[in-house]
Image (cartoon, rainbow, N blue to C red; front, top):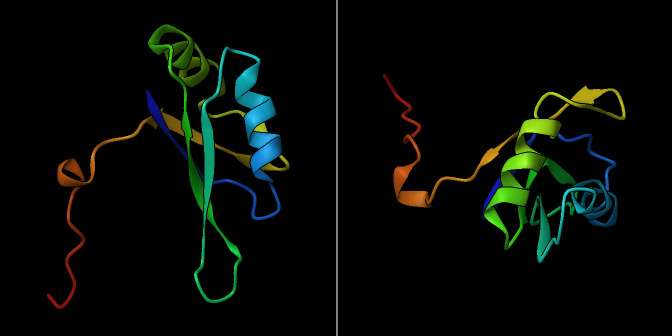
Length: 90
């Protein structure tokens, strides 16, 4: 299952995120999204866990958890086509 992790502290590392989610089971990949120019974290990322029941446990346990002073948002990632489109220029 692909898991969205938002409101991350900008100084959290992929290794720290993997360690956090590994408490609930196997983690296949961790990807913190960064700005392509500065390399600075954008404050969100994705964690892939192959076992859905372990992923569900991680989501329930970690959603709202405080990490380095910020309460993270954790839920199942939605495929790009299902996300609401941001509109500008009203």
